[in-house]
Every structure is written in C-alpha cells, then in structure tokens.
Length: 154
Image (cartoon, rainbow, N blue to C red; front, side, top):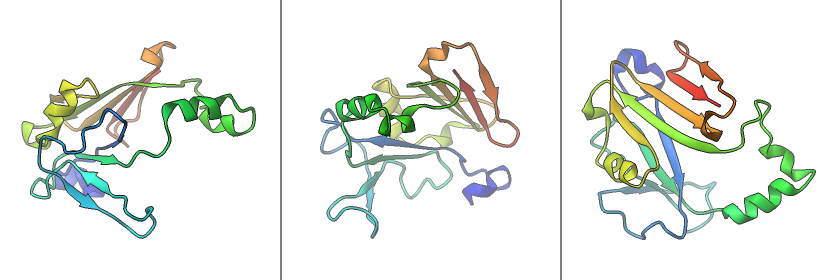
C-alpha cells in the first residue's frame, strides 16, 4: 500500500530513530513492538505509529546499537571510516521535516518528537520529506520529485 502512495493516500515516509541513554524506557504515548528472526534475541523495534493509523507517517525507534562516540572513532579509521564518506561531502543529518496533506498523517508521537527538536511536522499540499545535511553548508538542494516526495539540502 505504501509503495502506491499516490493512489492510496498512505504515507510514503518513514522515520527510524535509535535509542540513546536519554530515551525513556516507556514513551508517553501508545506503542507496539515488532521482533523478527534477524534481530538480536530480546530486542525489538518499537512502533510509534498506532496500527489504527495505517496511512500516517511511520515512526519507530530501534534498539541502541552503536554509540556516537564509537561511530566517531570508526569514522577516523582510514579503512572502515570510508563508509561514512558520502560522495556529496555531507557528514551529518541536521534537520528533518515531514509534510503531510492533512493532520491525520501524523500520529500522536509526532508532537512528542517535534517537542524534542528531532523533526518538524507540517501540513501542506502533498507528502514531502525534507532532509537537511550539515545545515545546508554547501548551498545545494536536490529535488527528487516527482519520483520521490523528497528534498535534500546539503
């Protein structure tokens, strides 16, 4: 259904967060858990978009896997650090904005996430994911529409 978002009205956007030490054990809104065979035993993906809102933007939080400090050390490694070097030169995700065609596109978790400054959620004419890398330092914007409802600033 989500792959046919233009026809169905389902959100083509999903945002995945990673748990950090600051993430509360219990979130202040209803969630549900998903666990699959490929995941480490005892871990789960916590879905923050209610099952009753299948057309809404998909929000989830995954188990903590690697700390930022470990990633920074890995990035300094001349061989393994290559995976962090994107050809466009961008290094850090600094902004995320989701636009939905109506407020029904946002689950209750969206206001919590916005309140913590992790993403912005706005109502507009159509679905759009707007991503900013390195605060747009290079002054470049890539518009992937109409193929994908996405703008990338770097």
